[in-house]
Image 1 (spheres, rainbow, N blue to C red):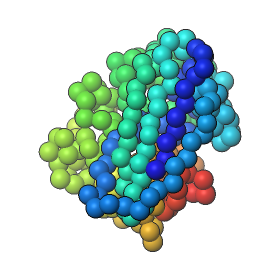
Image 2: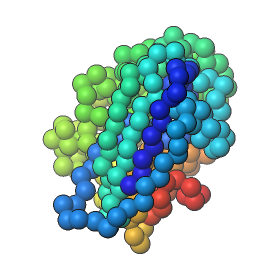
Image 3: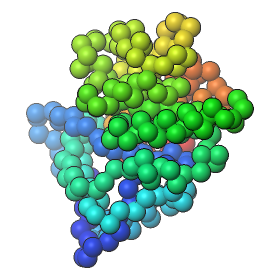
Length: 282
């Protein structure tokens, strides 16, 4: 069992998730039920009674995440997630305590110097505010030559009506298996065919389907597929979806084809499932 517990001894300035370069994993995570049969005792890790803001910032700095546009909030507290991982299957159960930490606003985003960025990824959260951010990027791109335009990707992970407006933005749109199933689709291929009309002209829609791999559909109408690359033993699946997204984005940003990016994403996500945490993936 992994547990990250942080309780501040006094009010502190708390960081709110924002643009980070290189990519950093972000929540929230979704629960997966553990097997009903009892499991052997698991390890408990406690980072100690640290100020939550300090713990988060130290962790980001350890992975060389650029924090110059980090937004600090004076209200709310850093959320806490307790993660229980099955040693037998690698599945996880997540107990999340949301503490009213505000999401990043469009006003916060106005402070970002867009010319510094090659690719911006937005995970669907407060979508109405994020649409304003995406529109600002569009306005910026309209004034730029092709080689200076920012590539944009968005992720629609949760089956929430507010998030569906994000389908219409982004050069690459990631839709989750959970959202696809919410719409009644039974496979990634079905989901891509059924949801592609929601993306903007020229965009590519991507859907990962766990052990069945991942598929993508672009403006040429050609359906692309990559098989999954499961590890010899599944250890920890927490963050596999975010790892897949990050690997696809990295590959595309290096000039690789969507087929190559899909395969790389599945390879990296598969390797992550065989490791505890994220260290050692690359």
